[in-house]
Each structure stands twice: as C-alpha cells, then as structure tokens.
Amino acid sequence: MSAVTTEPMTSPPSGGSSSGSAFLYRHPRLRLTGLLTAPMLWLGVLYLGSLAIMLIAAFWSTDEFTGQLIKTPTLKNFHTLLTGQVYWVVALRTLGIAVAVTLIDMVLAVPIAFTAAKVVKSRGLRYALVIAVTMPLWAGYLVKGYAMETMFINNGVIDWMLAPLGLKGPGLGIPATVFSLAYLWLPYMILPIYAGLERLPDSLMEASADLGASAGKTFRGVVLPMIVPSLIAGSIFTFSLTLGDYIMVKIVGGTTQMFANIIYDNVGVANNLPLAAAAAVFPITVIVIYLLAVRRSGALENL
Image (cartoon, rainbow, N blue to C red):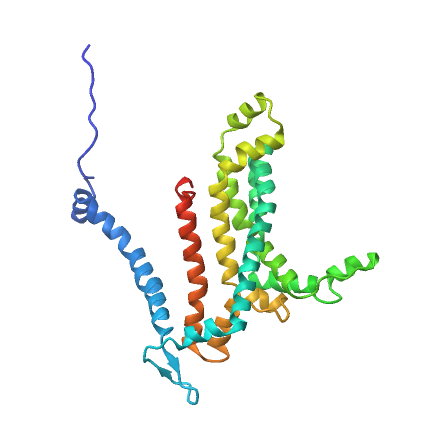
C-alpha cells in the first residue's frame, strides 16, 4: 500500500475570485498596506495632526482688546502658567487626585478580580461577575455624575444615612470628586487585573500552599508580583482619565478645580485658545513621563 502525501495549498483562491483578489494574494505586503492605510490615516491626520496644531497654537497669543489670534511665536502662555501660583496649586491638586483615584481603584479591584478569576469556579457565575463589573459603563456619564451629586450634596443621601449617628457627610469638594472618579474608572482597573489573573496558573498557588505558605503569603509572594503588569495597565487608564476629567469636578467638586477645567474655561469662557493649548501640554507631559517610566520598568512587555 503506497503512502498518500498531501501538500499545503499555496496557490491563490480560484473560482469566483477576481483578478484583484488574486493580485493581493500574491502581494501580502500590499495587502497589509491596504488594510492599515485607513486606520493609520485616522491616527496620523486626525489625531496626531490635531495634536500638532494644538501644540503650535500654544505659541500663539490673543489680542487683549479684540480677542483676535496673533500667530507670532511667543512663550507668553507658558510664562503665565509657570509663574502663576494658582496654576501650580491646581496642577498639584490634580496630580494628587489622580494618584488617590488610582490607588483606591487598585485596592478595590484586586480582591474583586481575584474572586472572579480564582475563587469562583463556575464559569457562568464568573462571566456574570465580569458583566456586573462592566454594568456601570452602560449608564451615561452625566447620569452617574448627577447621581453622585445627590449623594454628596448637603442634606443628600450620605447626610441622611449619617444623621442617626450625629454625623455629617463631606459635602461637595475633593472627597466627593475622588470618590466619584474612583467609582467611574473602577471597571478599567478590574478588567486588566482579571485578565492577568486568568493567565496565572493555579499550579503556582497550589505549589506555594504545598510548600507550607499561608494564603496571605502566597498572595503577596506569588500572585501580586505576577499581576504587576496588569496593575500598571489599569493605572494608565485611571490616572490618564482622571487627569483629563473636567465634568465630574464641575458636578461634585463644589469650588474645587482640576487642571482640565483651566483648559475648558479658556476655551469656552475666556476664549483664549492659545493659553488653553499651552495648558493642555501639562497632562500630555505627565502622561508621557509616566509611560516612559513604566516602559523602562519592563512591565508593558509582560502584558
């Protein structure tokens, strides 16, 4: 009996395939170029192009009397931001709020993600927990914002709950802003950690337990080091989203301002687009520095 050999198909599709399909089949690089052209144009022209225009506008100025743009290059806007004490205060406050939101979300997300990925054995219940985590994203941003306002406002829900204890809630301000933003961005921290824990073999934790390590020591020595890249990935979302938020602080922040409010007010109220563009350099710079620091740590390569 002779052996039957098969050869892999290397010829282009035949039959109803057009000559154009056959041509692209024979030129994979051209096919890849065609697939990537539209998204790269979107990224390069619309996103990076608009970002470049914004950075150029940061060196312009406005006439104090007419409000007309003066397109002569100047460092006046950056000088205003760097020498104005109020801008430093708002910048440091924004960084503090972003760090606080990120840390709170980490503390809350790790046990939730660990329970969903490793404690719950039923696949259906596990998926139900993941869906429950994403459900807050289904509601509109403003709906959640005004819901938070009804909680923190004077004589609101929190005051009503604390009244029997003779206590009063924090009201509108920085605590309400931190709590609201932590609630908003929590799913963006849970999902990367959940994905990282799903990739973690159960055999590592079983081996740690067999060697006599307690559950807490196993978690600290085995689980946490393995999910550091996931924690960093989640922190990029929560940190950057908090830096750029200006709506929630308008709703629940009271008189508190964040740096994005400076950008928004100079666009919509003061009509000073060059100063707004210069102010936008701050969050961009902070995010770039953070991403470079994370990249040097090697955590992104392990995602």
